[in-house]
Amino acid sequence: MLNFDPEKLKKDFPIFNQEINGRPLIYLDNGATTQKPNQVINEIRRYNETSHGNPHRGAHQLSIRATEEYDNAKEKVKSFINAKSIEEIIFTRNTTESLNLIAYSYGMEFIKENDEIVIAISEHHSNIIPWQKVAKDKNAILKYMYLDEEGRIPIDEIESKITSKTKLVSIAHMSNVLGTIHPIREIIERAHELGAVVVVDGAQSTPHIKVDVQDLNADFYVFSGHKMLAPMGIGVLYGKKELLENMPPFLTGGDMIEYVYEQDATFAPLPFKFEAGTQNVEGAIGLGAAIDYLQSVGLNEIEKYEKFLVEYALNKILDIPYVNIQGPKDLSMRGGIISFTIDDVHPHDISTILDSYGVAVRAGHHCAQPLMRYLELPATARASFYLYNTKEDIDQFIEGIKNVRKWLGYGS
Ligand SMILES: Cc1ncc(COP(=O)(O)O)c(C=O)c1O
Image (cartoon, rainbow, N blue to C red; front, side):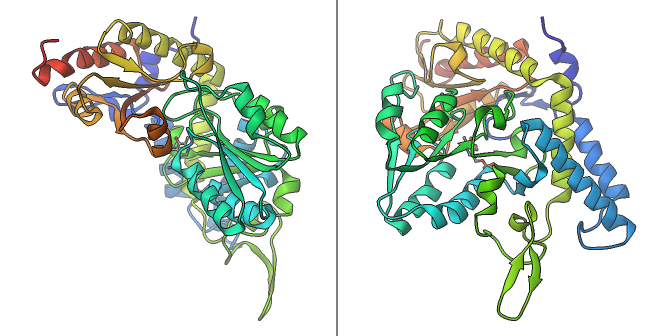
């Protein structure tokens, strides 16, 4: 039994008060970005109407209010992922910027010639390109863990790739293409035994499953607000304090300093050392409101519900002979993402035809070209679910899928 009513909850999201192509909007592109409830929209509005100022910069009331609200949002993030203190929470623009910050600051400082960086073949480009850059600039080696036929990283792959030469492992908690939940606990344990640090790309996991960075013992954990009901332009970098303290600043300028002299400067304490320039205060406040909303439903409930939706959808899809599914069959190893192809149909055509049924799915390489090459697929279509999707959404999605080949002139 669920403790929330998805139909009722959907009413919190004003975007669903519309039809697309004469059908109710069915939004199944949550892996790309999510929609906002009134609770988030109204909170951003309230801040702009009552408290907007530049934080940490003034003694007047609006600056003080903006500072308090910004810091309060950071407290919420800290509790949400169970970090030890707000010194370990850096606001960035998104997952991509968080990963770049780690690569440029930690990577360029601590990775040396012939050191090995290990990632998985399924990574998003945001978790590949920064490490390619570090490997090239430092003459280090970028190694890949490959997947089995169901999109999982086998244990022997973890053991053979993460070795005493490994200095850093960077891995998505959940694949944005396959939906696989990777065994990051085992990866972190193995890496730590061998003295390597672990970066976890939580872009697809943080919105959907309970994340506890201390329990996981992750060294860095990163995610984006816009994939968890918050606005675009706000992201998070969690890092262990002892690591962040030894890292040089990434961006420099206002706010991240302590004293500035003509030729030199000293830097502000954590977390401000990594937050140069005027920050996205309304984004932070929106993220705080999104966290309140998600916590009022409960992350464990959300995870349970999404598993139900995936199972419901998979049972129906697997009955359709010309649809092929990527990723693990074992539901305990996957989240609310289904990547699929339809025989003889390009995924872009699938997406366009589903759109005419009011159903939004993503099609393409999903910013994971090395994975697509590894799977020998040019592209896939992807349905990704969230707490406001319902069984009826999936029924409409399946109805659309069953009509795709007919639209293109095939008999069935
Ligand atoms: C696994 C993963 N990592 C990183 C990103 C990049 O996120 P952003 O574009 O918010 O920086 C995404 C976005 O889809 C993702 O799915």
